[in-house]
Image (cartoon, rainbow, N blue to C red; front, top):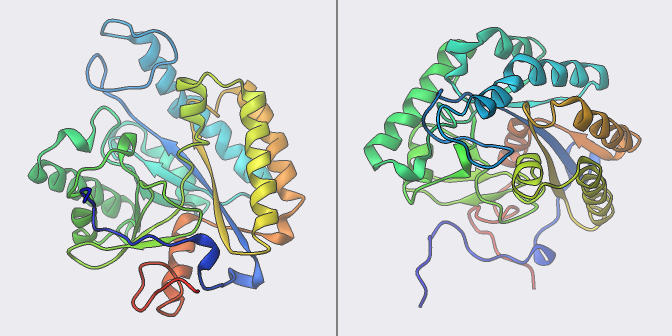
Length: 303
């Protein structure tokens, strides 16, 4: 038999127990804004052009644009449209630009842990190093926000075989690193269950703009198609959709201009959609009885 992870059992989405989100809504949508910080002249990093020798000042400055300009532009955009956000934070930003994180905190946005910096990757760490990384990121957020974070997304969505155990050990209630489903699913760990909340790995602005070079017009058309199809399907089953933003990508004016039309399209259906932060989705799923959500005690697919 093939090696397996042992974290979840197979479950067909068409055979699961039904439920609805608050106010009877069937589609939950969360916006995840990644804000990241990078080491200068070393470590990992995205680049929109051919790889360049270090120090790659062009790429470093492009990414820093997200903290200096893009995040503030997206903050104004969220205020204008009354959009709840999850802010996925590299905790090195508390040293670099704490006022940027504070601006999102003041409007009630959720602070989600996104590691220390996107200059490193958990897959390159030993178990002890990874435990220390998670502990440091958790401590920094707790110190600044007054409470520990509920959720985690790894830099580069990179995990080890120990990551889920270490996250649950550190008190995390959900993560967004496994693109296995369009509904939340409970994963097993050595320290109890942790929830997987859907996060757009395939329709991710970073992957689309940097890796695939998808024009922003086509990317935004794809997001609209994703929304329309999921809204229609949600009449049959509850679904969770995410819109993944990076401050140095969708914070660019030309991309934000296209995103504006996407959000306006979604808001025309606001009465049918639960616009929520990822932590609110987690809390709602936690409130459901056992046997409803895959991975919960007593769960099994319907015949």
